[in-house]
Image (cartoon, rainbow, N blue to C red; front, side, top):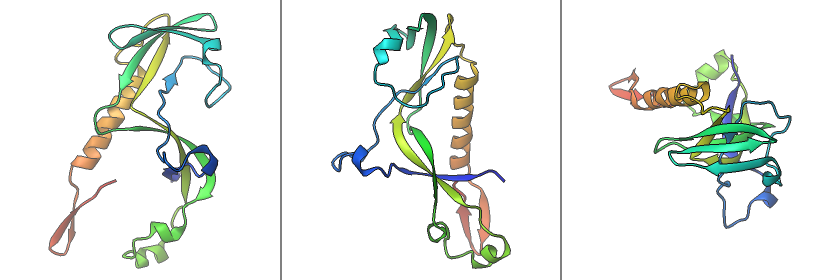
Length: 171
């Protein structure tokens, strides 16, 4: 069975002020190369020269290579999260709802690992070598399909009989 995760705010007290509890806004970039670094960099202008064009496209040069980028906005009601894994596990007391005491004895629960929020985003940029990524690009299409799947999961009622009451499952 695949691992289960929960997303929680970053626990580093020094990284965020008490007044601003929300994580920083960012714009993730999906670029067609392998970089052996994850995370922010201090000197962005040293590696990138970006020219913003109309119709949500961009042209950039990354270390001398020409890249074309397409901005992809998330639909209203959705927010992207940049999260990092931790070694922590959600305590079992926070996971049980009290109604499934018999189920807990029959099968041990899988641990729920904690991911920490590092940033949030409303859009991301997909880059291609020399040419603009197509609308059916793997990343663009994948995000659109996942959002449609998530929307279907949260809006389509799944009925279960609970005595005389029907409940809707929300994942």
